[in-house]
Length: 349
Ligand code: PEP
Ligand code: MN
Image 1: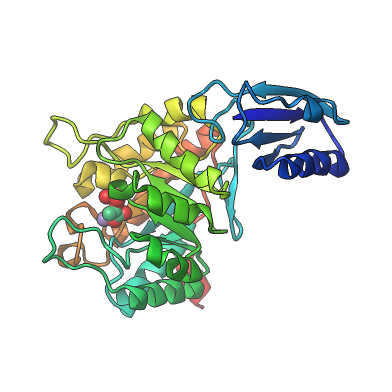
Image 2: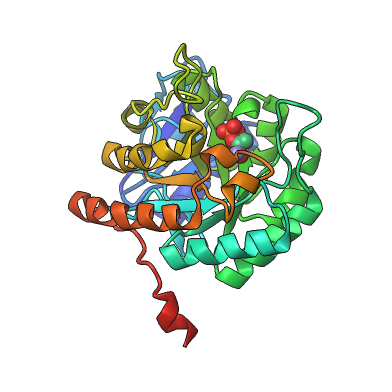
């Protein structure tokens, strides 16, 4: 890939001229508009491609190759952080964004109660699985489209955008009709047909690192989505498989600074699937904030013992409320604000 660096403050007409020449030559341009300047990636060009016609266009400062193995996700391509906006929530900005909800959407009462509690505690996005990747084919597989309906209805009532997993390319359209963020699960991080499918969607994607994927492979997976035309990608570290058995997975906290040094994409952590046990979730969540993550996605259930999936790692309501309270002073100290809790007694009178 080659990148065309426009001069700071280049005019829209000059940017348009570069894009037109690319199209006329059958090259694929991917613009990235920064606050200072615009850069345009030319996906199917390399060092051997003669781009002297583009280099000679007005307000083009430089045309150069990207040396990193991943391109559009790299800091070389875009130096300033990408902020993914979902409604009023900005992921990748100053705020530390908490997403929470049950592993699976079970029934309207369960997901409504979760949505309300997440909102009351200062959580910003509601999670809940409708299509569940289960190790056993005999385990609960999710309520499918009915689950999507319950999730979005609950989110709407509580004023929260939603995130949910999509497992198959054929279901991308359906899930995108309901959810605000499409989650690609750990087991599908290298499902390239699925990555290409969500690359064509105009909704943010939450891409989870696989149990056995390197950071470079995760960035390459994200590259598929950006190359497909969707720049709104949030990366998620959720624990990797190691020899350790005390936790379900091993949270690779170093993934946060490593990814931040190489990519402009926001990074969040899933402490629940990393820990596998609810008692370890608060420590990993605080560590995520301290390490510079842009947020977390946490599992929570009204009655964890009765959860259809991942009850052992799900916080109960008081546990989630106290986690949020313990996060705030740390966020303040680090300059990462966390949305305030709503005083429910006051709100209900
Ligand atoms: C989940 O979010 O419930 C889930 C299945 O996560 P992961 O893909 O990280 O295992
Ligand atoms: Mn889960």
